[in-house]
Length: 536
Image (tube, rainbow, N blue to C red; front, top):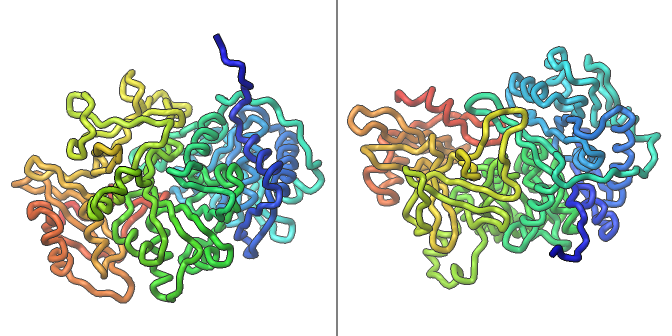
């Protein structure tokens, strides 16, 4: 017997429809590439999204077609998210921080029909255009006054295309399982791989992270999406904000500490999401200039492990740090660290230890850690092994690739992380499988060594890697970047480890470098560090 309940599709257009109907005057605030701050409402956005849908239809874009974007976090990019998916096409957000050859591969592999591009990235596309046979045209995300001279052809001005179009559109019925957006992994080991999200997975993911035990975003909040819209849908923020009735603030290309601090205070931001490197820059600005970040009360930190020192600095400013973990393949949120009634009863030191973990899974995903034989390990906080995940917004295959991300036929996705899960359900990443340091048959966590280094008052950033050792197999090497105006020697930093980690885990050598290489998504590129320093 079936239930007698309505069956409405979980579609991306329904999110903006909801905001237009119930939160029409709530604003989207964007710092534009051209410079000024742009403000309009969800009702304004809905009308412009309808115009854009008419534009796309007139350009011949149809169901299942791939449309690329190279753009910062801004209101026009939000319009693309909703209009492209709304007509049944697929919004392919291209990461402009990737190497040009990777961008060339991604656009061709996806077979983008059109590419919408911010002014910043026009020169990048000009160098690649002759090698992009599937692209039928380029639309520059600006108005007529700011249109550049360009060799891109055919090329259109975004605002010119929108201007004559009607503010209504006959939205088609969409199967919630239909593809909605496409994002490629950063491809640090081989070609990038495409993860194809559906309407259903996107809406379920947004509903889950909206909850009190996740982002907790509500109609009283002002949310700042620092995490880029060109990677993993900005962690769902462009969907969660209108779904919640929250004001959405978008920083555009200005991601330096001073610009972010200015937006936070001027727009009354209460919650913000981004990677550790961005928050380090923001905190450095606040330390240098003084003042506060009020009314900001919580930041969501993901993308890489959040250093304890960063949490402490935010806490000193009255800002709660919410640690999260996920991957491109998981939409991306898999776990998030919020306390439970049970953990709040623990002694303060135990609460702190739990707070530094990656967190508990959201309903809709399941986690497991396995031993060498593939058998599941207990949630005891000490057993550790490769981490697997499955769920409603976890991919089961890559776009146009035979490679399956699942482990055989088990239905689990192998994350590539080594983790533990404690009796309260909190998961902690011990290391990446490829980054763990195996010394004398024992594992040393590179993440733990990095967090200790960053806690040193003179250290801005740190990376730990394995170097070959004739006796122990591998020994840890730590590379650090010092804070501007601070001094420290190798021995100062090695001394800092004493008493904070077992003697055999202490790094044998510390190298002080000018900078560390990063991936396109802000993670430290350890593969490059191994090439540079493994023989040190």
